[in-house]
Image (spheres, helix red, strand yellow):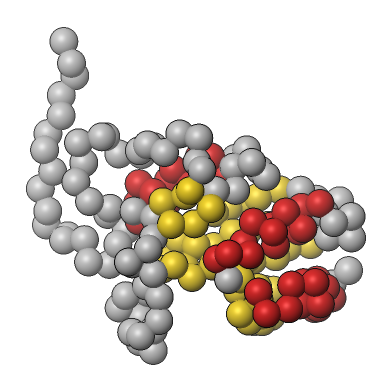
Length: 165
């Protein structure tokens, strides 16, 4: 199954829950409504013809200073799926507003999502509802802010934390 067929199968199954799909330069992407995200991801994993058995990456993008995106949701959470047996890839995106920065956790589908989601929380401040261990992964607990947000002050000084004796 090629990328266009994968997107066609998702459009046929989920219809209006897919806000848009595109295949820019061979990268097949489905933009999903937040309420349908887990259903789409589960289908991608469990459907034998798709067989996306690997969550290769999960990250986020802050579009706050991106031309043309001033009026839309500030963030996108991006899932990169890989099917090892079928050797095909898919990018699934979900838009998230700054006012409600919560997405359901995918850690029940792919255990590696636990760490990826903690990294996104740490760097962007986006939360994952139902996550089993929602705490910082890369930064220390006293760190203030989320450094990959476009509005994070580049010269901000953080408290120095030494070893606890």
